[in-house]
Image (cartoon, rainbow, N blue to C red; front, side):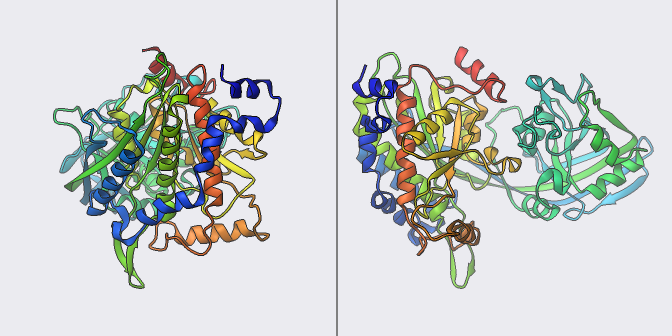
Length: 549
């Protein structure tokens, strides 16, 4: 056993664990080394790193060169470091939605696209034309064995349009994490479940409390061009023809025509004994047209092999997205969305961590994968593609640390870990933090479902214990109230041409956080066993299935 492991295990000196080979090597992750990558990737020359653009190719070239220079191996079978993936851009138009008297065809009411509903083809078709379709309300549309919850109760919903309540049950702290929004509460889960059940379509009822945002967010976001990973030739696209959202007022009219009260039905969904309710006598006609364009995305994958003959087919995976918003309408003459904090900073941290793992490669029992993905900003699509076409067996990947936006405003005493309490990787981060006198805090707004909104989520979906560290709030050597200043600057710059290196930047915080994560990753790499999800976590069953195969 290595001397440093013995010291850490005995707990003789609190700081000695940070004197491990990783702790010493981590000192090379500095403000200056991080800034070097950020300056280049966030420069105007890279044109905002939009997916499928020249800026994306420049980013890919830069990343490949950096991985080669540090001596990392290609993570792709062809040795190129590049994993290309096909995308579709989809724009829906000519959308019509009408309630009809079932089996008669008389129109009971029509809904306006954008104001009352938004919808889009779910199977890459150019036209959807559905007449007189049956409607069934399925509550939250959740099947969760670990919660002993099934909204479908063996009902046959194949070929029907599902009407679904948003969110997941949150009235009981012991059920679905209470007010913490789980994946079951995300719209993506509900559309995936509808496809799995063979439904013809899926419509989610919007309310501001269950969504966490107003209808304007839904209508603006979902009426624009949407992006998907393009299906492979011959791939089964499922029976679901469309997905959509509907306003509360439009939903109320729909339920009233079926002799039902929408408020009562939404409340009824909170009962574990809820059973699907047919909207008797009411059918739906819907027509959608869509145009498509092909886009070529590219992930970059590098790896550093482990030195233990029994464990070197297992890996820790670091993720960060390099894409941003590209070129948009000029604001005061500036049209480049540089994406310095989001996410040149995270990419820089990944590169520096990989470079320093390479420097101590003989000390690594398992290997490390550096996965730098594109198309995060248009729906986590690069990581989604990797998860479906993984370059290594997911059951052999011990954990994921996702780097999406680093602390670029100075050192903090704390670090927020999205995923805290959910897996042993988070426990390792907490262990290292405590040894260095820092505090780990959980997600400060779990009701917003942040866990499902960055690339680590796609790792979690295939069973990999994943964490998403985010900046803390207890600043060191900053004026009182600086966290409010930071929040104001971040809010003003987020997803805008102003996301550039500015006078508030202080990368001492990013360097300190990256060093902590580097040490925690090292412990996961050298731990006797693979990392695990906490008992009862929604991703535990997938992990067990993956690791037993």
